[in-house]
Length: 404
Image (cartoon, rainbow, N blue to C red; front, side, top):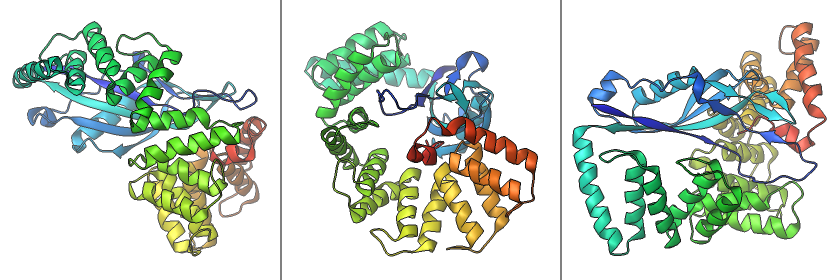
């Protein structure tokens, strides 16, 4: 029995360009040379379990993993835990803001693919079926055939043949193939040379053909710090298209647009509707956005208990702004029983993830002995970090620093 090497993909920022005076951010990147592949659990291997786990890793300023959670299970806890434990041992290049290393959360998708004789025979049969359909003009079958050569299950792994078939499927207007081709160019993977210009051509084609992740990507192209009203309207339109297809990231961003009046007329009720749509699908940013509306009574009746509920859902997925907001509800006893210990726990989690508001508040609390025992030395460490980062950020960026 042979194990096919799993695929590891980091989920990076949406924007492909930034205004000249915006802070330069580079995401955390894994260094594959520092760790081996996660070991397949014997019980999972015996049961031939496979699947894709979406994991979250908190990467420290030194590139080491501080914390890790499962965002979306593969369907098998043994595989989830094995992927977490394996990648925990890896060294990352930390996220940087204007060259300054900062701790941050990053998401990693880990795919467990099993290559057994039975699976190989099944794949060979599928390949013949896809080949026949592709010859009859089925671009979707051509894409599936391409992936068989990429994965190397049942056939010899062949990136060159994969690329040829993928390009043909994309040239025939298959949206999923166009998006996959764009991603290969954008990340320089699967034998493709990195080419951002080509990537954006194919992302735009995929988006125009209705592929949701590409629509989200196109929204990010127009959604920049100094975007014109026309560009923001374009961004809102792409976000809407993706959100209507159930894309949680797009629902979150569209909710922000309505809340802030960017690209659309300000409408708190619409903001709440899109936040709720994303939140009910488990998106932590959307849960946080919905919680803020309940806390402030915007578009919904003010309800601190509902705010606590939605902040809690986002905090469970380690969204730093929600952790900081939940901490303050515990400190004040608003919407939840007053509890300094819980408040400090959530505030510290947000601060460790580089939420600058949480860092500042924790430093001040440690300095004054408010809600926590005074510790001038630790207070100075947090306030020094704030001073290092604060000059490079606008108020809005500072509040959301650390959010993924």
